[in-house]
Image (cartoon, rainbow, N blue to C red):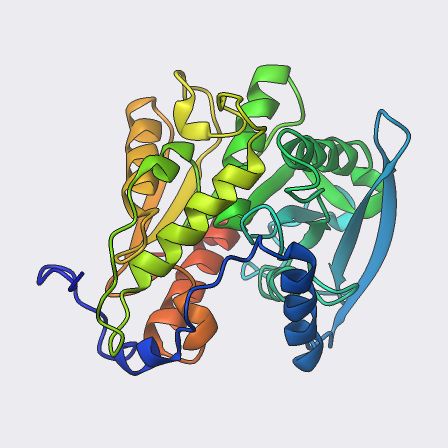
Length: 338
C-alpha cells in the first residue's frame, strides 16, 4: 500500500521509517508487552530536578484503591505572567494526565511519568498522573471511571493540594486523549467538577475505526506506519470494550449526540495517523456545538512518531504547541499563543 502522493512523510522523519519494528500483537502476551515497556522506561529515567511527587491511594466504591501520583513544581515556580495567574493563596492550576497505550499499557514507573513532569515544570502546574485500571483484565468502564474518580478526588482535595479548583484541565495522548474527552462528557452529564480545558493529542475517540479493514503493507523497505497503527488500534478497541457490548459515549466520545456545554478543547492530529479523520471530525462537531476549539495537524507524521524522532523539528514543534496552548488556557492573563 504505497503512501498517496498528497500525504508524504516529512523529510526529517523519512529516515526513521526504517526503525519501525515488524508488527506484533501486543495482546498475545500482554504481561510480556508490559514488561518490555517497563524495561524501556527504566533504561531512560526521567529528570526530576525541581519536581517533587507523592503517591495517593484513592478509594473506589468497591473498597479497592486507585493510585494517583501528584507532581509539584519547586516552591516559587511561576507562570509566564510572573505569577499574576496564581489563584487564591498562590494556588496553581492542575492537569490530570491520562497516559496512552491502547488502554492496556503505558503506565509510568513510580515517580517517573515524564509527561507529567514536563508539564509540571513547563506550565507550571500540579500534575496528577492517574494509574487507571488496564484492559483486557479490566474492560470498559473500569478505566474511564477511574479517571473520573481522579477528577473528583482532585477537585475535592484542591485546598490540600494547593490547586486552584477553577483551573483543572485534563490531557492525554491517544487512548489518554479519548479518556480526556470522555471525562469531560462525564463531568458535564453528572454535574461533577468543572473541567477548565480538555487537551487531546492524537485522540482515540471513535471505536468504529476498529471496523476498518487493514490494508496489506507489501513494501518492507519503506513500511507504511498507518498499517502498523491501524492494526494496533483495532486490537485495542477489541480488548477494551466488553465482549458483545455496544460502545456508548463514555467509551467512544464520538458517539455522543450532544457536545454542547463542554469545556474549551485542543485537538492535535498527525497526517499519517489512522485516528486523524476521527479526531478532526470530533473537533468540528465540538465547534458546531459552540465549543471553543484549537486544532493542530502535524504534517507528514504518523502516530507515535515522536518516540522515534524526539529531537526532530516536527516533534519539538508539536510539544511546544501543545504545551503553549495548555499554558495559555490555565494562565489566561498570559494571552493565547499562535
